[in-house]
Image (cartoon, rainbow, N blue to C red; front, side):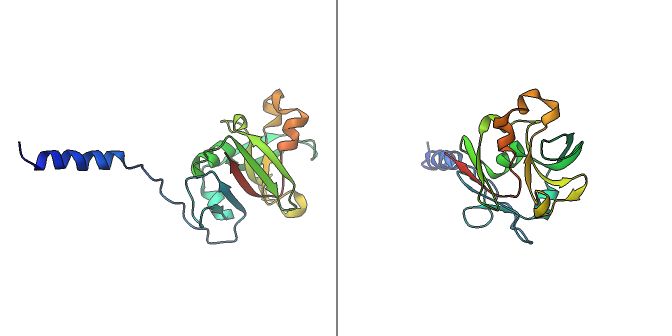
Length: 169
């Protein structure tokens, strides 16, 4: 038995034991609309994941139509599913603190980060949302698709003018 074989085994074990690090996100080229921080593993600006409009638009998006208690009639929203966004940034916590431009904040538990659940919407009826119309980002639930989303607790989590998320441990 040569000394090289045990050495190869040690090297192979070292390689296999090395954690796989997620590839960093590209840096935003425009003004960031959303900054995600906290217990995340995938970053692009320091220890945060920052997204400009183009980055959000280029992610896998979803569209649904629903009524809200803040608008008239059916509204069609397009955005990134919250569960997909949390997966992309490598969220490791069980709660996110979503905060608006005016510092209004809500906690959204991991139970809400589900397929066909809430999205971070950046379009309403095919148009970007100015700040005066609850934009530029709004966490919207598909209220009409699930009666469990038609509660005061869920309505309080539908935060508009969203600009930052902290993933809490």
